[in-house]
Image 1: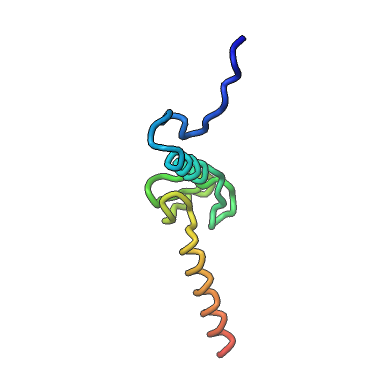
Image 2 (image 1 turned 120 degrees about the horizontal axis):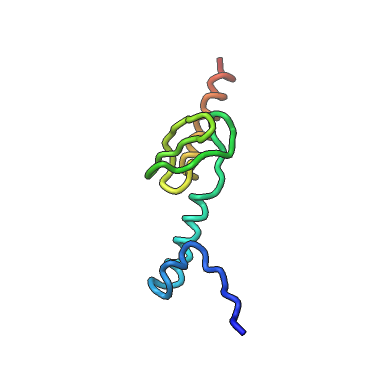
Length: 94
């Protein structure tokens, strides 16, 4: 009787090459890139990657720049947070 094949994920194409850590990182990056992302314009979960750092919503055709593997990077989120706090401080002072 044949043994059941295990699923290897997207990095299974590398076989036994490149080491376990490198294959795991590739698998994590590819799963994150191909996951559903929300559009910042319309909110639909239809954003897909068009190129390095270029993302586009399939629903409203909104095209924007983001990270290489994610539409919003942790650094970008912290910058947006600081801008929001700076703007709210200006409103409070005025």
